[in-house]
Length: 438
Image 1 (cartoon, one colour):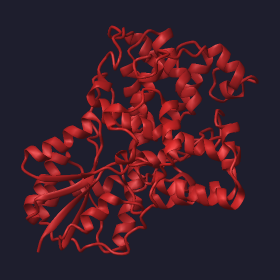
Image 2 (cartoon, one colour; image 1 turned 135 degrees about the horizontal axis):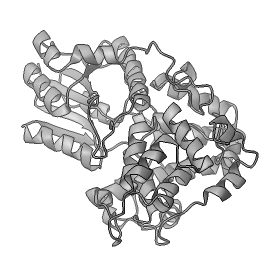
Image 3 (spheres, helix red, strand yellow; image 1 turned 135 degrees about the vertical axis):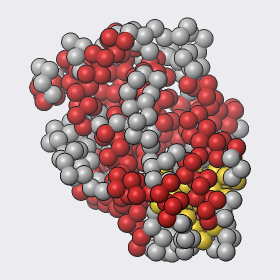
Image 4 (tube, one colour; image 1 turned 180 degrees about the vertical axis):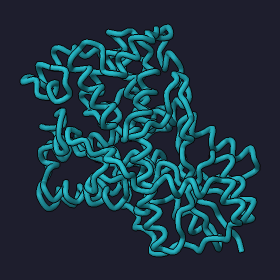
């Protein structure tokens, strides 16, 4: 008997799962699927929880759905409340495994997790599968990625690069090995299983929210993700996406794919495949094209990480600017939605209450923190990581660098005038009234 461990990371799905496919075809006779929960007491350098309650609840729902799916296939997901370097090593030793297969994530924290496993003596096979387009098919080496997104997009489109078809979900899994009870206890399996049970509270159900993750329609599971994609296309909402994408309130002004993309409950290749079918059946327009455009932006941020790695996380980012100043009191007021700027405060109250915020408002509040409160952009990035249900390490870091003028964009920084933004996007004040700042 030989066992391979499969470590679920930000790919909490069974459809279009190349890494899981690699584990299933590795030659092993048994599969031990594992997920490791973030430590509930882990803090950022800025003093707050790295994973806040909204994000934690959404991840728990994704894991709950995945556990149910895998149980139906005869191999339930083992959910551990212990760090990967602890849990995976103990599990591997208990079942006589030497190999872990997992998603490749090109960010420092996630790379360090893999390095710790390798340092402990495990063979770790990482599989890149979070992007729409594979990096190996780009018309340039990773270290020659165009410095501007428009150039990247144009070159990709001229080269005619399109995604491969998504893989179907596996019809069966390899059987699980027997894991001793003492080892299950040591890796916190009982606590892990308890932590993904449905919450008794109404968390995620604030009627003002644009993404009610506590309701069945916006549940974190893969099943909910695929159902949301299907209904979004059935209602022909791609045709209006470009015109409505800068909205501030409601489910339908944007696609809302991002929460499920962030946890990996939804594959970008599945979105693309279904979108192309939609365009074949109902016609393409600027709106449906803009969804492809946004998926390419998402890919670009991933390729930036492959190119620059930890450099993106320096205080000065990719720039030669001096380290950013920081205003601790201003930052605290910003987090609480008490800056005195009505649109910014409304947005930060929405984020705290719901774990979600429109893309337009993310830009506005990031700009305000950096340019008006003179605070360190990295503190804002960390707050978003803690709060957002759709936190994505690649997009979050790159977007904050973009606003701060410390990324690749040659124009250098983006200041959004909150008064003008309110006039343009909340002229009647309805959004500010909704969140009690008008």
